[in-house]
Length: 114
Length: 112
Image (cartoon, rainbow over all chains, first blue to last red):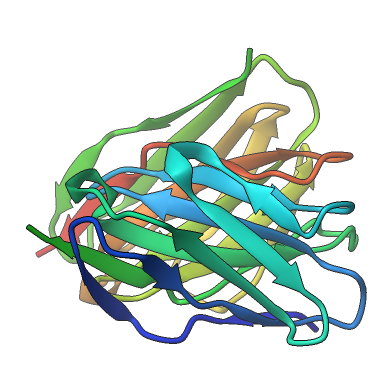
């Protein structure tokens, strides 16, 4: 079975500061890993994904994440936070099991302080 | 390009009334389809998924049901809503051989 743990349900950073959202996963097979962002009353939008190859992946809006197999982690970072980054962020893991299911973390709400 | 539509965007229903939420996908064929619920302050809970017409898998026992009458149509229903059914419902699709889930805009359901 696969699972995702997001440490910190709420994270606050100052505008211009580093954003670090943590995600650890559990998977018995090589995982596919994703970060999604959700703005209020909207659906989820894909930020970035890791499937194979380079372990540092870059996404939209200046975000990036690094897959670290030894730490079973896929933390999301952004060097400088903008006010528009305030949203809910979800980490997810998937594989090619029959149901093609995604397993989502419980989400991290990011607040950006001006 | 592919698009996913969910409606209605918001819905207020009394306890005990029926429910029907619809989701359709355009621009693809034979997608995997998913219904999630997001309760206030909580993560995503997978309710149902479907890998084909008439094929529904339920993840959790509940007051809801799902149907897939057509290849790109996924419907979430209830005969009698409960207060606990309130939440944000998201439909998603995924191409069987691919690995990204694409989400609809969601339906905010309030049961009063």
